[in-house]
Image 1: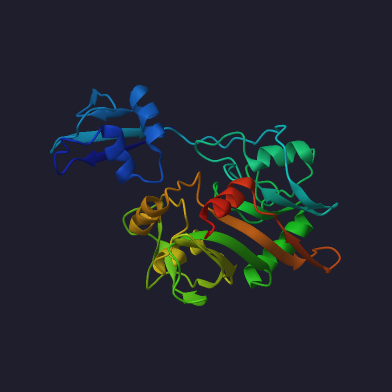
Image 2 (image 1 turned 90 degrees about the vertical axis):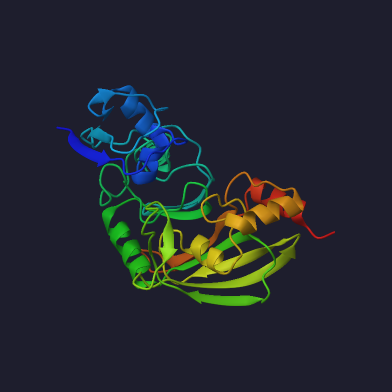
Length: 312
């Protein structure tokens, strides 16, 4: 059964399309989803069918019939994996940028989970449910690097406990806009969902504890290669903390802002994605208790960016 929601337009939007207007009010839903809802007749203005190009006017009532969500089981897909370590209990992968970790709205296939189901023949932990088998932690779609996957429930529980207890070692490499004024930084700023833009994270006094240590590894043209050590694991933590320092991640379309525009103008370099890489991951093996430390080599796009930005 669908769910109906009505939104009253408070101020005319002579330059805004309806699909964009709705996406701004419901940031957890993509603009493409609203275009499909409008096309299917699930969005009506004053109870009349409408188009995505409609300009909302003050006083109009926009009605949305949200379809009932369907819990779909992920299916195996033959997608190549870069495996750094594998045994009967777990895998450590070097995730490529551009691949989503698990199925979600707009990403029903082509995810890391689909690839894992094919590679592991279904032998993955079930704690995460049918959509997230084996997934202990996540990386953003456009972040590359180390990610650990559990093959059975005991391994999943043991690994999850280590992440919760902060006994894992998580080190990232980031290309940042601008050259930091100090060689090292410690950022302890609490994070929570942005009060307006719900897809973004913001530093908020009442947010959850977040702690990142940074150090400069190499100065580059109007930029730098930095190492980030995570002591907590909040969503977008490194990206928001670097924005706070005034040195956002190169290519970060969400948090880059003015420093990113100045960087691109000064260097002529446009990144293909946010240049953030989960370089190293350390934990205790869930079965043997032995320490495991895996490093993921920098991907080609990251290496090319560094070559372009080298100080000559």
